Image (cartoon, rainbow, N blue to C red):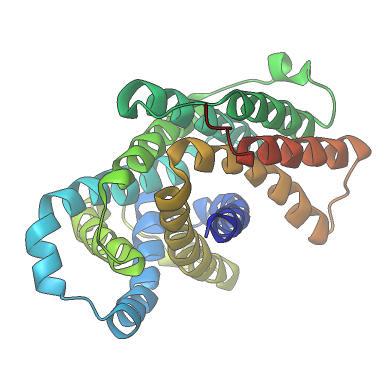
Length: 292
């Protein structure tokens, strides 16, 4: 079961890597709130029938027991996190966004230790540090001094706030017991989409600026990062815990580099080495601690 959880987490981060690329394109054509709204509206077209026919939940009963929990998660993960992520990409680069996202594993591990009292093993700490170094090598193409030469802006601040929201969401997921995974995401998404409707009027959509490529981007965001990643992430956290799951998010910049390569952008040797170091760090994290 744990091996399956690791695979789920790897797939979740693969889809999120595409989210950074397509999210950047969508940000040029859609206001941030519309990007977030349309992404989850598309997702619900798939989520509702999948949940209904595969998991056969008692919708009303689950809602009555967990409505406050769904509203909280929907506000944090669907409304605030999605909006901040896409709003940030209007002001910053996908590279900067990926760089700030590397703080996620450390924040999840720290918050897990402080608030959930999750035990952190030596291997987890070594894995986290190793993965972080690997990610920095990927993002800077081997020139680590570039970190201090990069100009940061308000888009980076928005992305950092998004990372904090994702950390809180990941910790709260531990309380989602007894709710089927797709049903959980579906309820959260329904709440999020409803909550976003009033904000659509504050940022009108300019339909004349929307291209077919932008529409394809929204469909990708709705199918893969929204449906696939959320379901896989939720399942991975339930099995492995937020601390271990968080380290896998260091794979996002690695996968982003690979996707960029397949789209015609070159890869340098430092990115390949950094990717291998990141994966090695993740393997350290997966090592089971010996019982005393």
